[in-house]
Length: 391
Image (cartoon, rainbow, N blue to C red; front, side, top):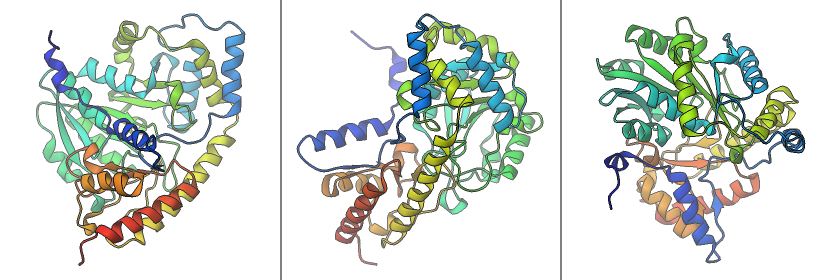
């Protein structure tokens, strides 16, 4: 028996593999601090859970419309109009099984074999994986610590060719927490228009922001008709296990998105969608409290890491990750992460899990308690003191 050749092109998400290794180590009795998974450690707010329970009790357990229940599509459109600053019709909204569904459908609908797609490096690995799977050519766009993990606009210009079809943006970003400025996005928009590019704008961390403003590139002049917005409920509302994402697409792309939804998942669970309506239209206090706690954890982990010789860590403006540079320890990011788990009981990810640029970085998620972050910092400091190469 044989697999289809396309399976040679599909990648993976290293965070889940790292978490599995950490759990296997825990099963042997080792205490492990988990800083690998990008998942809020908060429970889904009670009002959202209650709304989904009510929907179950009311018999809302049958097929939903393939694009989402009208009430949720309307709530998403209204929320986007306020928070993203662009006019959105409910007909442009598609509710998907997680944010990955948005990536899949956008790339499947728009990228032909041989088309080039500009992807952030470091960046979420599924962008590159799905581009390759569909026969496209991912072209890494380097994001460097020296530039605050923002795009170098001059370098971006040199990477655009006649084969370039799509540009993927993620701001605030995984794994760095970097945030693109309004000026960055205005210049990117000008390039997209000049070269007739579609932008896949991953805005899943848009509300987890500590400094500056979140700007949706779709709100800039000329960009609504060439931008697919990816957003969802996993990060903002601690709903990772619900698998609820959504796309906002230009009108010309709506038919294709609908067809791909029908051919893949039919629809998203109906009762969950009623929970999502409550998430958007109900009280936002839990979101505000979660972001405030993440800010405190960010400052704790950044200050702690920068106090360790050999480590340099920027203070991210958004998301809940730090992406420190660890070359001063004498180890690569991969060696550092592997040995940190085995020798110190702290689970982290190598920078190379997110592309080829960041060989001297690791990613740490601070979606864990302050007590556990302090424990991890103590262990990292002890580990570095033991392995660091003298200057």
